[in-house]
Length: 115
Length: 117
Image (cartoon, rainbow over all chains, first blue to last red; front, side):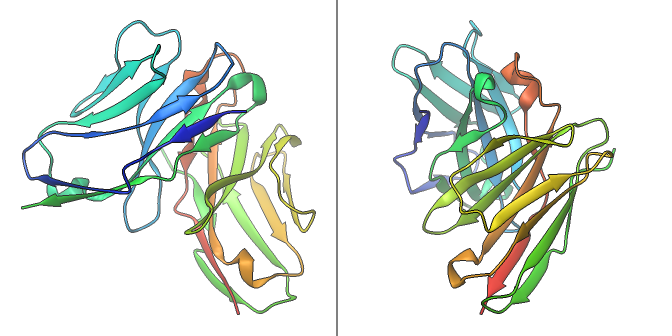
């Protein structure tokens, strides 16, 4: 079975500062993908960044980067230069293609950006 | 490019009733997945449909069912509603590739918020 653990229920960051949201995962499958999603209060889940298990380099998408440490089974999200609009819930998820499109999500981290 | 469309956005039902939720995926996406989100249980996978066939199913009772049409649009149905079914139901579409995880990025709709009284 696949499992995602997010140990930070809530985080605060000053505007324009960087913040790291933690995510650890567990799977015995060698092929998997790790995903981060943002969920504002409106409810829609917004895809942020993806890291494949075979990718050698850490993924980056604009202000988002993923600190992938395979041996430690961690996939932390780094948001640089935080903006007020970054305030939202953030979910880490794992998907194993061998089991179809079933994603396993963590419990999420609530990020609040302080002006 | 239109996103994933879910209808209705909000609905209120009473215990024992049934409800049908609809999801129109992104054009070209053949996989549609449904998730239930509650404060207590978080995001839980309900089922996935690919080319009109249920490809995967989560651990939910038989009261939860779904289907997919030839145009990839999907519906989910919950019969004999219980108070615990109150949740945000999220639909997500993707290409549905089983080899490359990166091709399975889920694009979510805005959700259907169901309240059961």
